[in-house]
Image 1 (cartoon, rainbow, N blue to C red):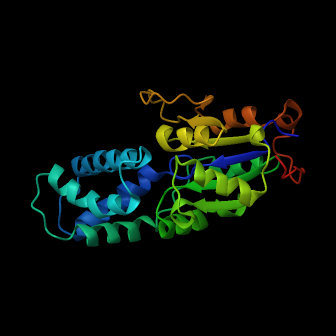
Image 2: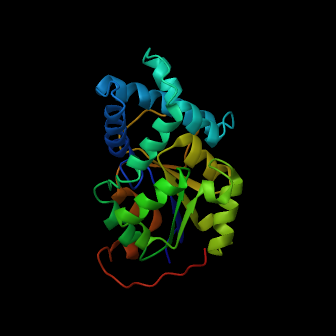
Length: 249
């Protein structure tokens, strides 16, 4: 039996390349509105959006408010006049974002290997319509025993309420055998800690941790995750299919 028999995984920048999807959707939307859509504009939006999502994780902002204000804040940061279309811009951006299901190289193979030994579930804070489309189109969904999106559940990471719902729905009772894996320290790692779970920070970009949140583990590749989840004999069977695992953690 695996060391961790249930693995909860964030979606964006853990399994799917959100940065690439964001850049493509944003560029297309800004071009449609005849607004600057160069690298500076993308960097400015990314900075504004990151600040808002961090505020959400700290309980200072609701998701509805985030979606309502991010493009008006972007316009301000770019020193552009308010065109009164920030809501429409956000809606169009979300529509375009849903069409980009860019998979991080190696992610599907990692899910296939991990699914041989553990129950897998995705836990995301993204907009429901966007995430459902991207998870389905990417091929990620077929490896999951559960797909959980905060908007549908009514609680967002890092709230323990979201994880309580997920564990109950999966029938998981032993939290010591559950690992939360994600790239966002304030949402994924803090959220897992709030729920009493072991946590693993996905740091594929070798970023410095300045958040004050300390994960139990830090990985830079999916192969490192195998060594956290699997027992030695399971590691020896990488590539072998139809192994059995217990859903009880």
